[in-house]
Image (cartoon, rainbow, N blue to C red):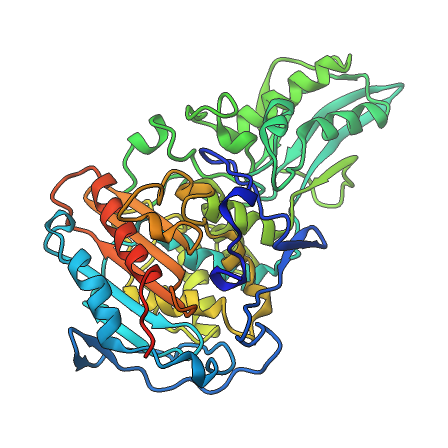
Length: 495
């Protein structure tokens, strides 16, 4: 098999473009709506079949000289080392593979990088690995792990409709409330048609439920309750243009089609919760239900039973979608939900606290303490590449089966998600199908972190960052980091 048991021959894969992710049907088995991945490679221990061994003390080298790397906690091990016949990974070989590329002037003056042997947890390469850098969207790796750990991979989010008033002969004298639960994938009929995986909850089902309940007219307004998340709706130091350019919608517990005005387009609503209420109002009218134009915000009363509910895909599938498409709203929703689950304010500050606490519980204390949002959009976020590698390695731990969606959700070079258009040409082509990683880009920032299979079949964890790019466009930096990952893929690093 290939990359951590998930690489297939290129012609066998359904390749998607843009933000739509097509899963590996032959590599993943759907379990309880989520994805359970069996990871295996001939000659390697089967993931989850063996107990983890104590992690070794970590030492790092750069250019052959040893250097200490701050390690708040040991990296988890896969369970046992590969067969001795496979050879020993050498630090010199890894350095020789990546040093020429990471020295490229197009990355600018500040490059941070770490490469870790997945089975043993040994740090094979370190370059400024303890430096606090901007993670950009690789911050979503930490959000994903926290969500899987705190919420659990099978959790689903329920969006409901609640009548408030008196129902007589089909007439509801009062309001109909649409109550959000943080499902950023709730879809309109048009949005649902565009979604392949995971299949979203559909707003039209709630409209059908209202009609089935016998309601033919509503005297009051359709109201929306998005109070599961608190203010503000914009992350710390987010640029106002994030909303106007469509990178993200204002963060709220209720939205339809990711807050997009038109599914598949980038334009977003300035008030996604009210837009969701208007979408429900229109669907009710299509079903012959008389309802006023007005849509307002309100709080659902305690103890009133919903007349309709729809459930999101399981958290594991939401994490996969978030990682593959680098979905900013989904990342922020998951972070806010982590906070809410832990009894913290469901705000950006609460989410940051909840994610950091979850990583600490998993044995990575301090690695999420520099985050201020869940998506990586804020220029105030700080992580270390050593910390990113530690968190990624948790997905390989036999003791953490709940985290498997971290691996299955990462885009694969040259095939899907945010890597579908990359690794097509030299010098990065050697990474096609062998690199599975989260991308990240902001002005003057390019990051890449994930897993790679070497030419001699070894599984490596890596994290690369360049956050002082000479050009504001991150495209060139991404090409160089892709080449560095591809250099690991083509490396015969064992002796």
